[in-house]
Image 1 (cartoon, rainbow, N blue to C red):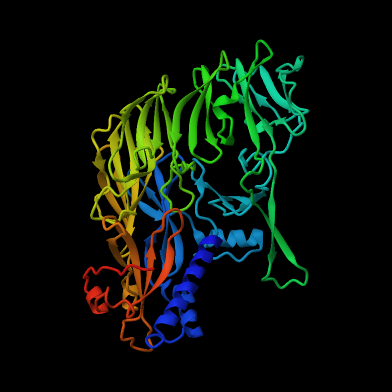
Image 2 (cartoon, rainbow, N blue to C red; image 1 turned 90 degrees about the horizontal axis):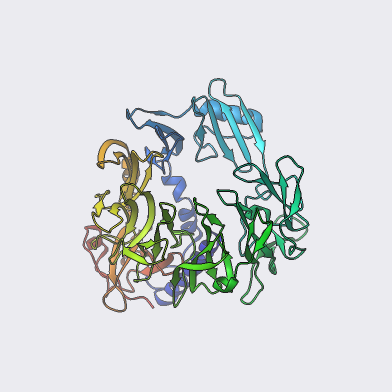
Length: 586
């Protein structure tokens, strides 16, 4: 977020300076009051909306879901029974806030509780949630609350990655039992050891581990039949850190912080998969030719029939992303699927958000007989079906000049996929997300969200229902409950009311699209009209224009209305809904 803020401020300063130089006669210099008005916009408008729903989540069991709605600045958790449609407050927020304040000595407000999600016990009597590094559990009859503090930096919560190598562990009491319960694996002196269930046998499986090249306990992975054990032997990388000086502090002494900041060519952690035969007490060598230039290797994943295991190899430079299978009997590796790119493969998990959303998705059908795989190999993010035994492509599942944004659910019995995508409707903003269903064979594509808006759906754990939350920049959020079997709408759950906001003078931003420099590609953005309340500006003020930039956050640009009059008509035309082209900016 700090990077986004810095980019936004930099773009704003650059644009403001440009406007000041080129149109001083039309626009006076921004005064402190202008910035104060901008910084207090949430204070002035934030309490003027009613029943604005946020992202829903399903409770364990799938019988009910919960969402948080905001009314006049206060937030309330609402619980909905999917079968009956009955909606009620999830719990007494005033009593919970009082109970938390009593125990924690904080000043939590009932209308602004400091958590977004929670879990209910099966009998509905206890509420469990987390606030920062504290887990809370509250009795919903007495509202007595207990807490447990944990350190998120400790334990195995952090996985092996290019940024992090777990510390060497030599703790025989920290163990990993085989599925059949006969053996216990642990790490001692950086090597893998086996201890029998009765404790009478204690034998080493490896001898090549040492300080600086240690087996990592969290990577120990048993085959389902308990005949083999796999693990990563890891050589730590060089941890380059950059120090920052905090220039905004009220302390007399200087305050520093550090971040991990590797440079090209730095030595990264080097994980090497190793396979052990339990009966023979021997190590099976795995040839590393298929993963010789490691950026990261994914966690080891065994097939259910124990024939082998797989991991995903992200080559340094990110131009190759490979699914590798290792045969349990021989230790022979082979490439099942290769993903290549002349630029780079976006190796983060597939997701529909604007931040930290990559392009990688994999689903193993029937213990790997088939594999559903996401790829940009045709220029767009789509789903493909591969033969998991041979690695051959069976068919492309989705295709077209649009992109898959998220996979919600895969039904291997019906051979159907529920997913979200953007850009399928040519007349809509290509950033809007819609939900669809399609067969493994690429047939039967069905739209689940016909409303022209940006959608987010959440399926119940049993996949019988789904909740659809949708909105646009000119349409306040709405939420509805659907039955998954036939996509029938069961109930309109919530419709936000912004009438007070509109009455106070708020106007929604304007959506626009214009041709790019190639004269063909539609570029979409959002236009904010900023009017000064104390004066009339002949050019109708400034447009604040959000436009998408590839591979970076959207950047805020200030577009002078009068200086670009040749490209824009009068503001009154825009207010009445006439679509006007934007001028090309330098």
